[in-house]
Length: 74
Image 1 (cartoon, rainbow, N blue to C red):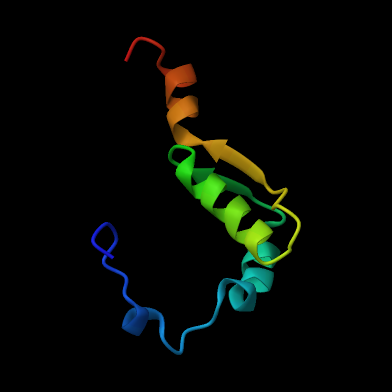
Image 2: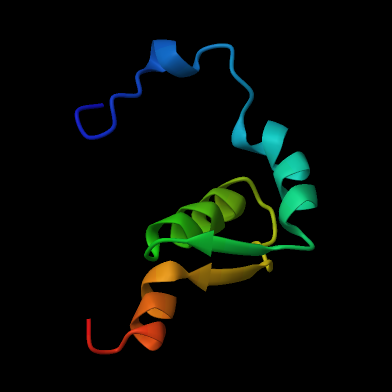
């Protein structure tokens, strides 16, 4: 809890990952998901695996890599 501030009481009664993933997958299926660094994609892939779902195959774009390509001297 010290690293993220989320406690058991914060999530009590809230939908599980599996409970919301279908809607999220629907929303991102025809989109490119922009993320900053590898954490988000790694976390989503891990969450999918943890509940027995196929790892998300949406198009992902790491904004840190895009920024380096756009401005290689920064």
